[in-house]
Image 1: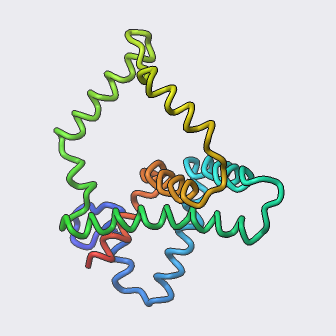
Image 2: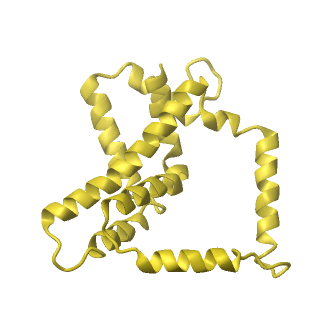
Length: 178
């Protein structure tokens, strides 16, 4: 509910809720929000990815090694979100505010329209064959379940899931920034 009659976005409302809350209320909110965000449709595909990473290690994987791989995945995500928070803190305002200008939105819209024309057969969009062969060779040499790969996959997953967690993350960043 707006305090001064002006429409407020979700991030501002979440930050205002945090201002008056106790430490344990804030911790429990973040924990609950994290659990609820894990049930969103774009987070569900990450569950088989993480499972595949762990199972990719082989049949003789121990519970401790599976836990360590899961921890590496989560740390990759956490460090990515922390880097986004630091970038937002240094910028003085939320990065999403800078990306909401008409010029930026129009540019991305035009780019998406141009890329979609490939789906209608106007042109074919492919990586160069030399890049395709290098990627194929690299992927055939990689074995699942290495800590560095799992960490990188966690960081990449955080970028992919970013739009799904944008509003609660923006509220948290506003709270931390204040």
